Amino acid sequence: MGKVEIVRNSLPMSGGDGPNSYSKNSHLQRRTTSLLKEKIDKLILEKLNAKTLISSDSNTFRIADLGCATGPNTFFLVDDIIKSIETSLRKSNSSKPEFLVFFNDLPQNDFNTLFTFLPQDRSYFAVGVPGSFYGRVLPQSSVHIVVTVGATHWLSSVPKEVLDKSSKAWNKGKVHYSNAAEEVLKAYRDQFGRDMEKFLEARAKEIVSGGLLVVGMCGIPKGMPFSNLTDSIMYTSMADVLTQMHSEGLISEEQVDTFNIPIYSASPEEVTVLVEKNGCFTVESMELMDPTAWLKRPMNVEDVRHWMVCIKATMGSLFINHFGEHLLNDVFDRLTVKLVGLTEKIESSYREKVMLFFALQRK
Image (cartoon, rainbow, N blue to C red):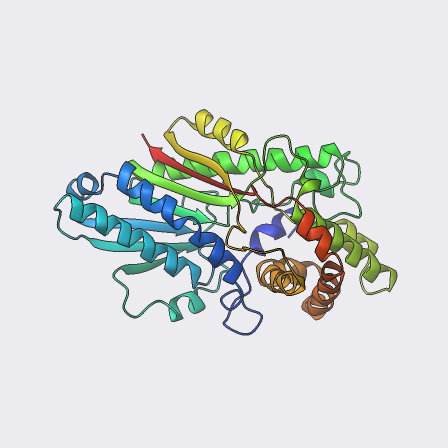
């Protein structure tokens, strides 16, 4: 298996429910997701004709969460959506439908942990759907609402150009397009464009006419250099840590030079162009939000430590796949120490409008 292909199979969050697992270390993602609740509620009440959708079907309302990971955030999200739909139906004096929820993630995702923690008092039937959301994962016109939060900024693979020593986009000594050559940024941007085209094509087939696609992902204001963002400090520090570990003989130069984080932050304008090109959806919402709006004070050292615990649970599988499990704790211990020392720089970096929220309605 080549380096480009390997990424697709190493993206699942850390499984299980142990101290380093995603299920125990996704509280920052939960807080971010909760910021979307009011917007999703409003969309369902104002844009979704739940009564008509159900009456033209089998009295079953179907929801899909793509990139659901191992919980528990997906359960909170689904519960909020169902409550909003029930509120909408009560206002139209409609009977309560049955709910079916599709939980999707890559085949390597820890579905056992996900289903172990399914709420006992849930008001829906649950189905696991393994597969990449950059292709079809559901039957045609089978779902009324598709939601994905914190997933579509993950590319399907590292752009092949950044791994090619003969390419101008060869990303030697760096782990991301932040502070890299313009050719590296272009390679990431083009890969995102190809991936999002496939994502929209697949959802257009799966979502019923009048249904909603709701997405929350990493974003950036148009024209802003990524180097202004908080995450840029993290990626630069990652590269520094890996270079240091190479100098100590713990990892090879080739391992450092071929390691890249396949995450891209898109602007609203970029996504809008792709949606218009697809032609199957109307844009109901497209905006940048502050994912740390819940933090009502300056970031401190403990905030940075908690951030790194969440990043380890989110990205750990990438490091294990590339460097080996025996080095994971060493990498993140060093990274945490380095970033704690940069707390003031992190606090002063740009992090206000770095979550892109958009909602599309199937024509």
